[in-house]
Amino acid sequence: MPGPKAIEILGWTRTPRAVILWSSMTLAPAPRRDLYALLALLVLVKGWMIAAISDVFLYGEELEKGTAAKAMLDGLAIDHHQLAYHYYEGGGFVISHLKALAFLVVGENLLAHKLLGLFTCALVMSYGWRLLAHHCGRREALTFGLLFIFGPRAAQKLSLLSLGIHFEAMFFGVLMLDQCLRLMKSHLGEDPTRALLRLGVVSGLGIYFSYQMAVFVGGVGLALLIMRPGIVFSRGGSFGLLGLVLGALPMIWMGVLVGGELFDVHGRSLVTDKSRLDLLGTFLNSVYAERGGFGLLTRIVYPLAGIAALAFALLRGGLVPRFLAAIALLWVVAWIGSGFILPEHDYAFDWMRMMPLWVVVLLVGSIMAARMGRGGTVVVGSLCVLGLWNTVGILGEARPWSPFQNLGLLQRVKGYHYLGYVPKILPHLAGERAEQLRRLAEFDEPHPELLHTDLAAMGLTDLDQDFGADLQLVREIGGEQHMGWVRGLGRRLVRATKGDVARALAAADGMGQELGDGLAEAAGRVGSDWKVSPESLSAEVAAHMASPRASAYLLGTGARFVRSFVVGPGTFSYYLNLDAAREWIAQQPPATREHLTRGLDEEWARWLLD
Image 1 (cartoon, rainbow, N blue to C red):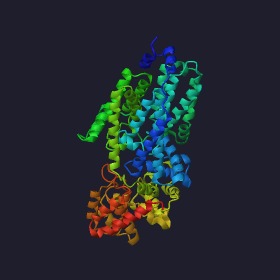
Image 2: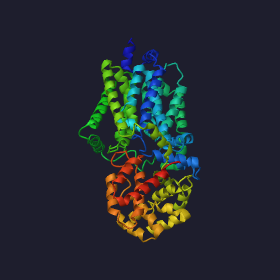
Image 3: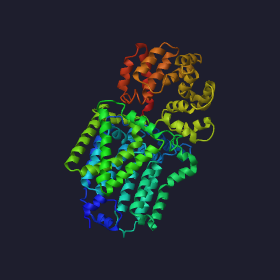
Image 4: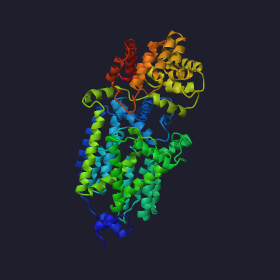
């Protein structure tokens, strides 16, 4: 008769006696004070990142989902399901509801997003700790918590985003893994009905949150079929399927309302005809394009540590690490076989889809490191030091020494962004474009010109009509407030002049005083491109400072500095930093500074709640 240690090593055996022995083994309970200490550390580290206004804001559609939340609170005359940013993102729609609640508590500001992001981050870590504390032990759970907090640079940033998709979905992913392990280790005489029902509900909700969770559902189902076929084909198995349907009811409801659009992921298929080797080659070349320095070191150390942990788990691990490693490998196979390998990984956000893999590999690595004794302690300590260095680097790029001033700023800046939300919701609405825009103009916006400018900027981009028709449309919709709409026509005007900003300004000069100034400001708001760097803006100012309507154009250019979330490739230092903007203005020709400053200040005032 093999002892408990032998059973732990064998792990995958299907003999009932081994399962009973495994379930009877006792583990030293991990005290909850460990979790409380980890949560305190997480709040300290992540809270400081937020208070420093680090690079943990606005990636993806964070503010756009906040705009959906505002639409719910403002009671727009739009069917509720149509407010979703993407129909296929159930988690994104759920997070919009949570953002609406956060807006009610702390205001419709940026701080609400980050508090919600901090909450979901703590939730994922807590349930990862709980899984290891229950199935492995205190050492493994503590290791997971520390490596979760002091993880890779991208993971530290992405864990604070409030998007409701891949990272947040791991709350359900971890619950699935935990429930599956409990079932695999349960006594044969126990009734699995309730456990299978819970697993089914969690699985259905997980798939609704993110389609990536389907990989976890498949892995969990396969593991139970191999390890415990008796409970799969028992009465409890049917309750598991019932739970799956119940959990997926929100997705089924959305599917009934929108049909095939539920599975339209940016118009792409879940599979691809492109060579997987070519995609992987491009991906790896992008990841390791940096030929030296600390960044390259981290991109070598973390993958090697993860691969070693998976290999160690499969070769020498017991039931828990082998099961988790198998889930990780199944995810990798699904990722390679899908059409969603991002070929370029230049920014932290590009790693968002790989967050489920990171969490599972972290679970495996925490188990195996804890079982390595002193060697594992050295590895964990080294990775924590590396992660702490990443944390310091993230804070060093921000403003870590004025946290209270920064928090006050986050409380004042609006937590919604019409510009990104409008093009996503317009296809959801029926009727002519004028009717659609009128419905969206019902937002309760304290600065209507901000709303109207964004509606015009994004609401006309796909229309096949000339610029004269654009002007007629905004006059019809805007009425007495149509000049606010005119300021959003910059891209349409520049497109009408084949991208020639100088020609656009000349055209504006021939359209009367008020309209001409409005169109020149509109051209300044877009210039040559939405994304700008200080250098490109300086070149534009120099090129057009003597153009017709230059003063109005410069107003728009100053406003664009506020509207540009990313200034330069991969940098974040100018967002919410008026001092940096004014330093740039001070370097411009004297004749331009007054107009640039006015444009900056007026646009900034529109972004504030008070």
